[in-house]
Image 1 (cartoon, rainbow, N blue to C red):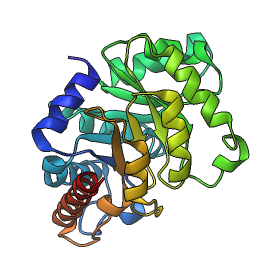
Image 2: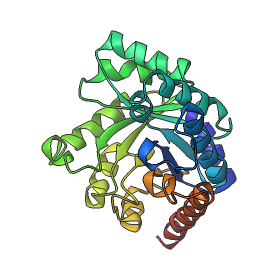
Image 3: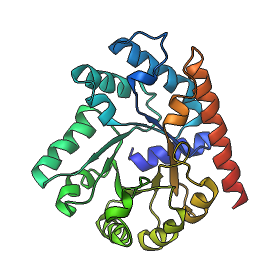
Image 4: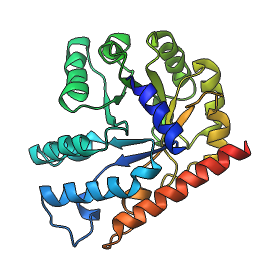
Length: 266
């Protein structure tokens, strides 16, 4: 089953467009958990267990695990293996290098770690993304207009539009999507006009203060899965106490409901 078919099945079953990022920071993990590889895995698995009924996908950010060295990468691999198989996993790795290196990155994220999809950066051009896109059963979300302030340095005023145009041309297997930040909803309409029907992975809701309703309004394309709304810290660290997992689940449910309410009012 392809990533987007798996995602469509998940969205239909749970009526959710929520993507929960798994970005563990030692200093924010509840103190009652052991400061160890086992404690980190326990923290993440409890988050997964309490939020799983409300999510369309989980999105572990590779950088947070890489920073912990070999033990962190072991946690990442075990975490991905233990996420329920019906829930797609997006490897948030922002990969993209010259062709032969990208082939190794694609092998790592899809085969070694078993992710259903990946985030990539387009700066090196088509030959850098081709090894990812050449896996028709896997999803590839290309950075287009990101939610950070530094997006102004290169992506604006119009580089992001060229990215959208190119990704549409490269999407011969229908397995590409775009990363489009919620902090600039006014730009999304122009991106949608160029990209056509293509799923968006949308960060910036929650801690970064993105406008949910306006984002959904501009991002919707009438398809079954026009977007995934991604949030990490507001769910992951909803509580620093022993009820952290339950509070994460409550926050995820509320955001799921908020997304669906906004969708119904558009």
